[in-house]
Image (tube, rainbow, N blue to C red; front, side):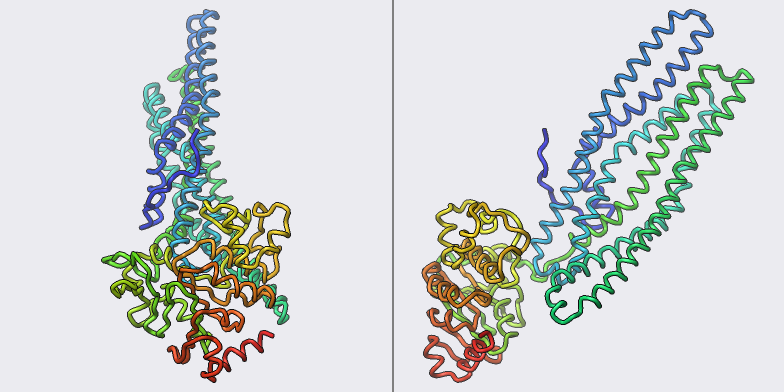
Length: 578
């Protein structure tokens, strides 16, 4: 028993063809086994035709009916062997579908997680969604049918050899006709590929529109724009339908050709064989055998042409997957990575002068919301800025380590930025709070309490085993926000940057969070990018950013008394929220 998914390996994303070859190399044993079992099945039919022809000639020549039992035993054995390999082939072909599809999902998902915000900036969301839905099916279909392509080539070679040994002219006809038929489908594949690509582009655009529509539906209803956007979506759906119809016409044409060409070959061979049988150049048994060969040959040709059509579709889908895999992160990895601080350190943004001190809660208030975004992105290294970028300053010795000199994975491990647009995934609450597992229920209870989210636990008798829907839609906006806060606290990073962690909660919950957060984060560095007076009043230190630089700092009460601009910013924001 083989367990899926398997380790995906490193994909070759230089082109669609190289990616498909990489998939084939990754599972060449299973692909070969599928080809062998399929070939045995097809060759079994060829052998039945051979034995049947020999049996007829033997009976007509010898006139001994008892010899028919020998031929009957041989035919029965071939039938049993072909029946026995059917489940083996079906199992192998299903495994090939799953392993190629899952491997594609694994590498694309891993790359998407690695790219983070870079992915959404470079590609529309619908493009990524289409890769994970339609494209994996097309790639899986190719490898599911790869066994029939291998067996088709084997069957055609065997039939050609048998015909050549029986009648040279017949064998030469097959050797010439098969390549001509395969090449004859070529002119249809190129326009089919173009229409398939166009249809795939339309599908991705429609998926992007659907994603945007769902995410902004509440706003659209508020401004009365759902009818306009719905009309645009219907128009785009019509274009996708029209593109799909054009693809369907070409697929129907290819299917007709796959039936026509082998059928013409079958008629021609039977006609020519009958003429040879009438002149005595072929025996009755050879004619019957040739008829059986032709039927097997027609099936093999159809399978081969069907595989070529699937290859066209798979190349289009593989090109989409490699487009995601080839994306480079906006933030380059350092050429000469350095080791991070081993002891306590402060996180500093030289561009603004903001310093997140170790062992305390630091609040950052920005007069301009755009400054809050820029400071947060630099502190978490989501954006390096024009200067040297954020840096870690060790307490012992004052050694400075720039974030851009650390591997990005280490930066993400040390510094966690928790924003309000973080996604809540479907699944058990326990796994949502601790995706990596390993946290005992006592610890989960602690972070839930620190986030003032006890009511979420009380809502379901299943407790931490309660199942969340996507984005936690069954919970209110405030409950979702507190779940996101609890998840961030459960990660327990060295530096935690919370962006407006209580903007959607009621005053009672906000007060509880303000009181419990410093206790939960004791001994580590915590930053609150907020204008909430309740949170600011419980912060150890507050820094006020104006025009991109820290212009005042102290406690919340000190700044209210000594910095009028700070007071205006905090009180104005509080008044707008009220």
